[in-house]
Structures are given as structure tokens and as C-alpha cells.
Image (cartoon, rainbow, N blue to C red; front, side, top):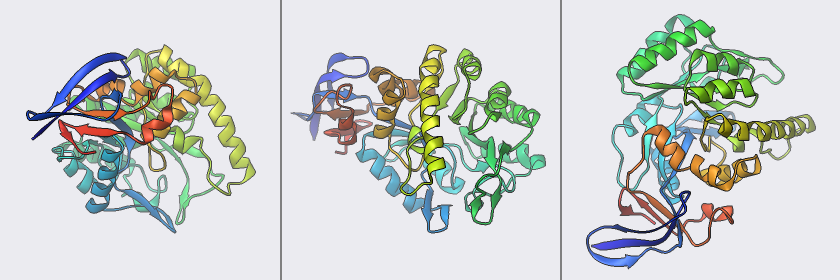
Length: 344
């Protein structure tokens, strides 16, 4: 049995420490800088795609995804929507060598307001019953698709208006039902509906590409969170039309004006990969959009751990260089320890 020892600087607190994992012969972990495990706060373990677009995959797909996240230094995942038969099962107990999972179960959206192969539609009159079913199966989060463009057989219809999925009074009732049973609500939104969702009391805003200063003030006042998923929102795809490129650029500039305000108003900014990025890439983008290096690292570590109730779980990921000065090293950790077990 080896006792792995880290002797270096732990970030983002910037503290010199000596940490030991195990009870055998001591061996020094590689790396001079450490983080207490990365947190992917917006992940979809069962979501993939094929030639027809996004769809849900099964348990093997999710476990392969968890293994890749572990090797990248991710110690915890908040899965915000997918195949509930898989994600809620994975959230019951952490598996050795894999990240802890918090899960929201299914996507809650009505007919024609989300990707057809990604959800079973929930009409308004059935929403509270669907919420109760999720909570009965021990979901700690609920995933509300708060708004979405009209969807046809092949997916979202380009140019269609983004509209609210449910009336705000129904969202308020949903939030009340979740809170009464100790769960929280994460809301997907990319329109001005975000203001209604914040006022309805949702706990975290996902994407939030048009969130306003007023929204941030209200969200921060009650300790709410925002996961901007910048990799999904501002990074382009090859071959995109110029109008899409222009919209992404304008979105990037707007989010860069809002993110520092979020910190100022006490909003918990969280780092999330969605299905296209990585936590390492998200930290880099957060810095490029107005956060300090320490704030961006906290969004991916201590702040997320505190918000999700994950602190003190014996995780460490190490790097040879200081990620505050060289953020690219986050993509290539020197060593990873999950719950006291070295896996890399």
C-alpha cells in the first residue's frame, strides 16, 4: 500500500500544504500545484449525437463518460438532464475511481419544446406529477427546460421564436414542490424568459445568454447560481453561416459584461461543460469573459463544491505549472486523487 503525498500549493486558496493519502510507504505525487478536484456543474452523462442530432444513450455510455471525466481531474458531476434510469442510479452512491454524481433525472419540457429524441413530453397539467415522480426516485435536482424554440421532426426550427415552456405560476408551484422536499431546480434559458424564471425562484440558471443585471441582483440576493456554459454558447462550429458567427460574437461580448456583475452581486458562477466542452476549457473562457483567474478556478472547484454540498471529500488534482498563469495545464493533470484513491 502506497501513501501518496502532495507537497505544494493548493489553489484557489493559494496555501502551501502537505497532504497524504493512504497508510503505507510514502511516495511524492507529481505536480507542484493542486486543486481540490474539479466540478462539472452542467453535464449530460447520457447525451450523445448521431447524424440526426442529439439523443440519449445508456449506462455504458455514461460510465465511459465518467471515466474520461475522472482522468481529467473531475471529482463531481451535476447531471442536468438525461436518461433518468441511468443518471438517478449513478447518483445513489459514488463508484470507486469515478466522480460523485448529482442528478436531475429527465428533461421537463412540453411537446414541441425540446429535442424529440431527448425527452418524453410533459404537458402543463402533468408537470407537478412528473416533478413528484422525480423526487420519489431521489432526484436532488430537477431540470426545467424554461424556454426553447419550436421543434419539428428534425429538431429546432431555425428562426422560430424562443418561448416559455410553462406559465410562470406553474414554475413557481414546481419550485415550491421541489424545495418542500429538499431538492432544487436548474432552468435552461436563452431568452428574456430568464427574468420570470429568476422571479419564480429557480435555484440555478443554465446558459442564461440574455440574463440582465436586474436578474443577477435578484439571483445573488438569495444565493442562486449561474452556469453560463460558455463553450456551448460562444464557441463556433465549422461552417456556420455568417449571421450565426455574428450572433455568437455579440453574445460573447454581452456575457463578458455580465459575468463580473454576477460575482459582484453574489451569484455562484459555476463551470459546466454541457456536451461540447470541458471544465478546463470553461475555466479559460471564464477568464476571457471577465473573471479573475482565482474566480474562474473557484467556479470549477471550491465555490461549486460549497454550493453543491461536496466540500471535504478527499480529492486532489495536481499540475506542474500554476494554472492561474498557464490555464492550458488544466487539460493535462499530473495526478488525480478521487476520495483518497489515486487514479492517475
